[in-house]
Amino acid sequence: MLVGTIGIFDLRVLGLAKRIPITPLHRLAPWGIAGYFLNVITGLMFLVTYPYQYVYNSAFLIKMLLMGIAGANALIFNLFIFRKVDLLGPGDDAPRVAKAMALASLCLWIGIIYAGRLIAFYRPAFITFN
Image (cartoon, rainbow, N blue to C red; front, side, top):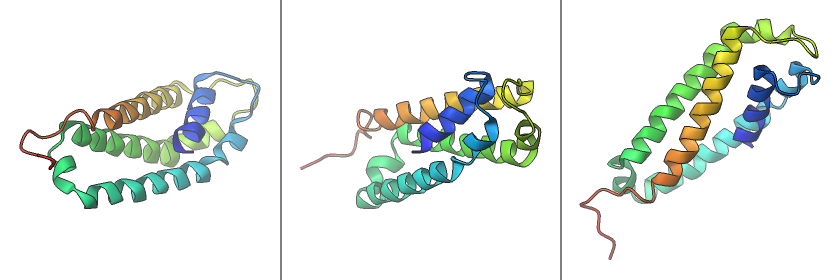
């Protein structure tokens, strides 16, 4: 839900499928936010069950760093840039700063997914499973 809705919006801002208006795509954002909170809840469940497996895991720490940067990117975009993008009609190009932020968003979410997959492979050396 999260990556799909945000990914579609970011790709449109980058210029893919220019005939689709941006405003209706932005209306899907609540679904992306719901997906984010679903991921946070399930992630916290994993973290609470065995915190040392995650807290000392470099892949987990990288994922958390990337999530923080992605959140800051989304916040800055929605507070300062979206007003300019919302005025665009079908076929219009987004401003360069909006395109740069959309590209950063896509790269960050790909990195978050990749780091999340690596968590299972990089465990702290002192963790033993009996």
